[in-house]
Length: 103
Image (cartoon, rainbow, N blue to C red; front, top):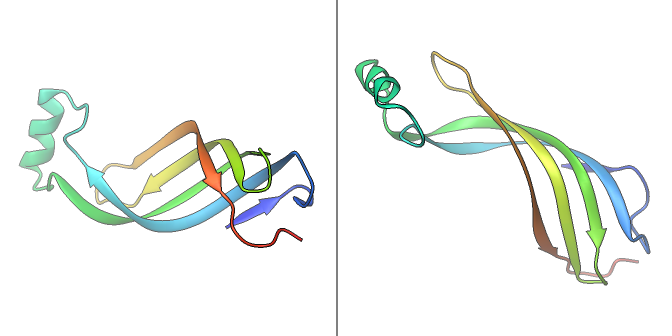
């Protein structure tokens, strides 16, 4: 769900804040030192599994015409796992294709 700071009709850009929930696939074998990987395996954790997650962030939508927008933003992800906290922040951009009547 996103809330925009201004009306997006006929705007060249719009700031937003976002919040949501989903199921995240946790991959415990990515970028872990061997000692950490061994400690996780000894505790009975699986290499990957789906866990409930929440995501929040902010950014700006840059409208490039009536059907394409560039989304630039940062997002905070928190995955509910047993034991240690699993959370991270991402920053990036993506292209969104807009459909429907913007009026």
